[in-house]
Image 1 (cartoon, rainbow, N blue to C red):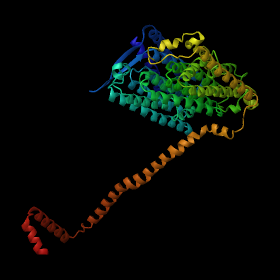
Image 2: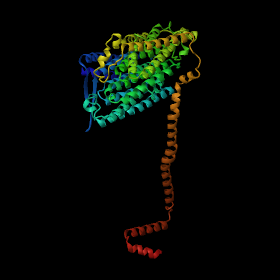
Image 3: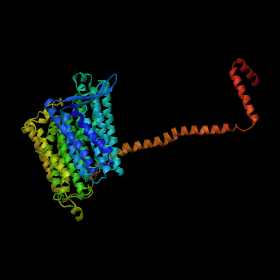
Length: 637
């Protein structure tokens, strides 16, 4: 079994090496087969590991000692348990579908760029697998940095466009801010307890060494890392800009891999977070604030991918709300369901963009329902799922989060329900504007619209199926279920407390949430199916369309001052100061050399005089005593 475990990340790494090194001579068919096949094999092995964990429980497998110094030792080890095995299924399963979809979506690329794309995708999956399989925080951090690097490469895949390069740089820099927090948390753990291994850190003996202050500092630093990776306030602005990459990349980053890393890290560290109520409150507040704030921005976006991007930020906020109120299973449950319907939404959007020859403005769409029936029906199912309508998957996971939020603080529930209503509205605004009504392009453009090829529609159908049924693994007791996912994850999420609400209260909460979502859906369809808003927004709408001017604010208070400081340091400190000193030393030496050169005049008498004077000086120095000083005094004074 241990050999199979090592193959899970090794196969994508091999795919990366083959496609990367063979990009100049491999055919597109071979490239797609190698790239997709590596992920498919990893998925098959992940399924085997999942059932093994379900039958026998979790295990730790050590490959070798990675760091061994006097005060601590860190192993290169993998931990395959209930939490990591579930994430392996999500990463490799959805990752394979995205690879399969990419084979057709990226076919216009030249073979070398096609190979580069699949190599980056394989490396991305490898890094994410390393992140979730690691048995300690250092191995997680290696994968953590790996996905940041790969996101930079994939967001800026079309590197000849400077705007795309800017978006890639922005993602990389903002992730570095969060990564610093994660790194400091690792150092703090090593300083206080001398280990970063999960099995040791989460043990009662080691936890006893941590004071409440230590626990708060460590968990807050870990949360800073999660804020950067999972795009929460204030480090969320990189994620919408990540839409610069190819659409399948957006699906991979937003659905199954990178942005869920922060959720995984906090869920894995639930024992530590249980020690700090302060951190839990902060996580919940930032989560619900991000969810609502980004939902308001999504209301007025007209780029089909930007709407989905802000939707992702909002749904991640829900997950952090769940983590903050102690509903760790609810957070992981929503990661799973969100992975299905958000991957479906992005790939559905990619299908539309592909059919419309890279058009992304929904104001130039409309009437695609008849032209693209498979894309239409699968996209609709995903919209229903994310809106939280039963019995679709999003309903069960979102309801669990809102119920836990209500039990912790009713204010969280009110904001959460308002966000849920906004989600239903902007998603069906997107659906109605894109698929309903009449096509708003030219007749010639409409004539060429057609359904995407099977390699793109088959992944849509599979994801649509799971978007509908995946929620049934977490049916709550109030609806007659046993929440199988909660029981499966219980050995890892040991600090989670059961939800204690009256059944009547739960029914009431469900009813209010569903009713408001349905009202928002009907209003959006009625408003945008026939007469969508095509004009530029004004007033508050303009503010929302411009994303509350947060990017402009960051430019004003951070970017421009930093650039001004850099300019001052460059021109004044470096050029005039440091360079000035160095250059003036050179000028002085040149000047002194020119003056000394005057002594070399070619006159023998001058040379004899200099020689005699020099001898006198040396004699005086050699016979330095009081008599010499007296002689000099009598001669000159």
